[in-house]
Image (cartoon, rainbow, N blue to C red; front, top):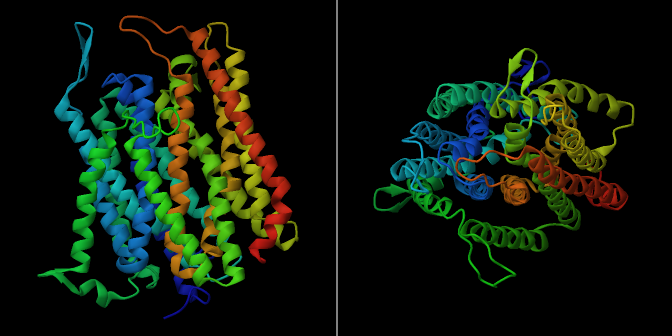
Length: 527
């Protein structure tokens, strides 16, 4: 079988392995479903089920934390037993079921004698659907990214460009889904938007299944015989993995409902939610396992490179703490305090979440073209400097929103074009940090634990989801039944949150720039 270093020309398309495009379209449809649902989620909770801002933020934080923590387990299972292809297919099936379940919306909540009455049965279906999605992402997300890395040989100069193309697939799906699912959900009913997301995931699963031959065996189990071993009567190891995952869905179903419960383990000091406590337990086990592996199974060079993987995970955590506010505080800011008319169209807040993905599509070809040219010219700034500037641009995007909130238009609302500019600046930062970081994880990680380290990357993102929700709560606004929003007071709260977020991005970026010369030594030639 040909290796990734020397693929036959027939197995390439436009200078890249055909397997890249299989992963591209699989991830495109998976992200279509994921972001189509996410664009509607907070608005659905607040407008349909009448959650308070605070409880809405708690739920999206719990959901986001779990959905990105689960890849740690999915990556480990794929590494040790299941293989990446089987993990992606199983995760895809769970995602299809979860997204279609979201289409069952039940009856809208209402105020009865000053008490909010909700459809309890519909909420249980909703929570169970979220649990299916969380588990499905856990099996699919780390493994599809890892497959992309395995398609390229070590130090292949096309790697960063390949990940940029792959990242464009993510954002093509997210662009279309936000506009389409947002329009369907807010025009015809929430179930229509969520249902369209489920159909998108079904298309992604079909694409991956039909295109498996182009993966050239890179995604198969390392020891297929171990999967076929009988472990419990007629049940094989593979059967038990699937049954265990379904049991995990039930556990997550319970956890996600505890989004606004906090455990006073150390009153006033450590009061985590059950979700956050579960994430801490996973993190301690993961970090302990990684450190044990680094100090007992790695050479000095491998150990230092693995330390740098952990550093890039830290950069990711800070960046996405800022970025994930686009599905939280940015959504409510645009829904409540912004003029929505542009280009002759009245845009909804959920549709505007597509701006980020749209700008990635615009920027991805530029960056895919730019990095190889800079490399040939000897002027490639390297992954550390790119990540530092990614954090700085994230901070600058929030300064744009601060300006817009402090300078409303004559009707008291902010202008939509400032919002568009903020998204553009943020996505320049994302292109500098996220695809480059994904590429570095696959390069610096010891090969036999690369899926696990990719899970660590997403665990960092899981904490950013929780932190983004906590930041969003700083701007939470409670509007009593029958009252109207005080827009000017709301703009003051949003401006304070955005300024605080800006300082986080700018300060972190400057620190990474200052440390870059020292940290670069531990990368041992990996740029």
